[in-house]
Length: 569
Image (cartoon, rainbow, N blue to C red; front, side):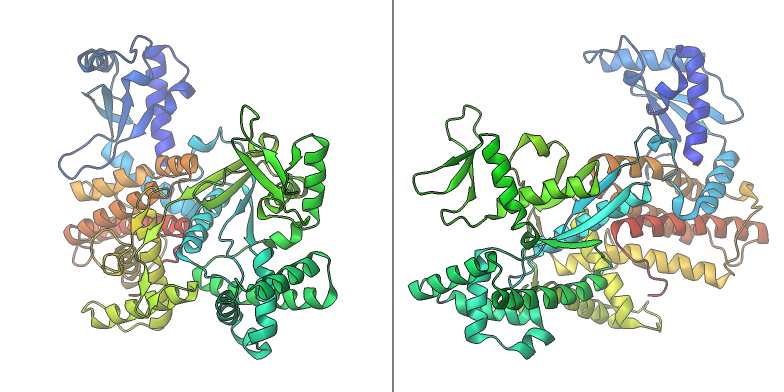
């Protein structure tokens, strides 16, 4: 990694002056974000992170004085061409030709592994992670919360895999519980086998809505209870009907997830843990944690003072299991079966109502906020497919009316990929835990900080490569890349590993999103000011190499976010 070589070189000089091992200094040396307003150095060292006497109450003046004292003891060399100080920092500018040569060589050599090979990750142990995400309920709406869970979980899985971890992607379906009693009765009254085969999600939802209108009827209540009890007792006929609901629904989900570019290693569900939940109840009983209430329900006291001020119900009075019991059984089973180091749940809000400390320490919850205002032209979003069809049709319309759109081979497919990028970027721009107001117009703008702009930039850079022959460029004359706009792109490429590292630490995609949007803006400016066409051959070749590197990193980052880069638009 280009940045690693430079950090190491700076650290080695600092280590002699500060009498500290270079590896202690490497993480204190960071690439400086590009600024539109002024020329910036390439790396900076924060004084507060390396000096003993810079306690938290050191004044800014004090830190600045220490920075100046340290800078005076350092010398420029073959790597560093200039040393300066800022507020509490020592700044290092890399020899300009060396910067261009090292960055471009590294990006083009590492390809899709650029950034992930960085020594910043060397101390991070390779792990086996189980990631549970999406997890819709069969027969209920696939609401927008499920879409968020799906794209967030996919991003985390992509990032982990890119960094060399082993990942198991699990979709834990809501395929059990009292609502299946109601659905079973509904299907016996209003169901249609043909419709169940051709559009299971739609048909089961319609049946569920219809029977729900009668859910308060005592007779319907009793029938639903009986149906679910038969399910739990494995009655053959009841189980066979339920299996059809589940199998046809999964088939349709797989088809829809394919449009999203998402796959799962395992379709699990609450039904798998119905029997295992009995083992969990026994384990709780053996540990003296299970208590019976007057009504006959089984509860676990979660309060600190053991005064039942906070408890979780784990079994109904008729002995049937609850969601939380099955969830606990699922967690224990996954740990035993996959021997994983960590389990990541991508859930709406925090699923903390069941804090059994014995298993909770290796469960990590990635919570996310609500999306408000996402409606299709037909009204409220009911199914994931509604969203995908809507984004595709709106994008097709925008592409048809845009002056820049060229004749493309498969407009439907392109519109879908660009539209998805728009949804993902709008969702990932802020903190995942924040709620946000969705806007179709804002998401689908072709200029500004949108997924459409990222796709447009990628397609434009790709066509530049095609136009001038896309052979692998080697021996480039880097002396031709000294303009400020070229340097800005190179400086930004230098920072990619730090951005990946940051996202890998807090599992927030916003760092990568913001990095890619800046990269696209810098590339757009450079594309205007550094023409390839009509330039001297060695200048044209160097610029092509710069744009090729920018496109390569842009594509890598987009794929991590779950976006398929388009080559025409």
